[in-house]
Length: 250
Image 1 (cartoon, one colour):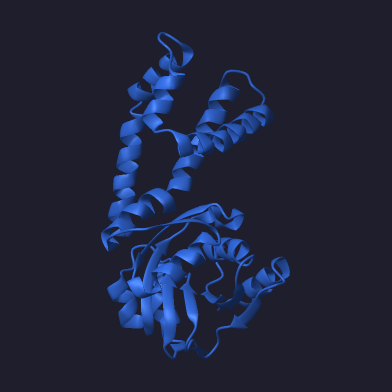
Image 2 (spheres, one colour; image 1 turned 90 degrees about the vertical axis):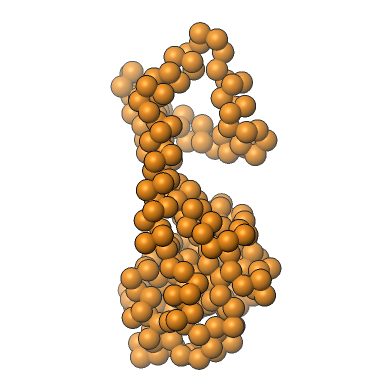
């Protein structure tokens, strides 16, 4: 599929890195240095500087700019796109329709793991472009089509912001090991291996079952788990999702 990605930020680069394996990609942006950098990193792509205007007639557009840039960037887009696939957090389908003309509109929420084709991307929008949207998102990971636009904002808090929350957990686990005397390099290696293996475990079992299987009566895990509950880690994570969802709704 020919895909036009508008944007040159970190998320755009992650998506381009993963999707270029399967799609013919054109990158459109307002920053020449970033365009040149992307071209050097990923020679297969075509780059276009967004100066006066850009004709998107008949194109499949993946809109990947910051939400505040929707209005200024949309003013430079002319013509009617075949489809607009937006990754803008908290930007409704209604708002997209007000600014950009397209036949089909879809919202999605990927994360930076897209660069490794490991993003967990949630998608919702016009059914007419559902299969194509899923195909695009599955080119850089897994895709889940949701049943309502509200769920996209909830998913933003989990799949979009989640990597930052898990990064905090990973950092804390390593810090705990160092505090007890493990070398930093070894602690980092252990945490990386832990997260890699845990993903496979989650594919097979519910988190509650995994917890019960690891936690033996009176054991080390039970002692550590009690400390987590005392520190209200579970409550903190639930509230983090709530706050992120609140922000995503605007």
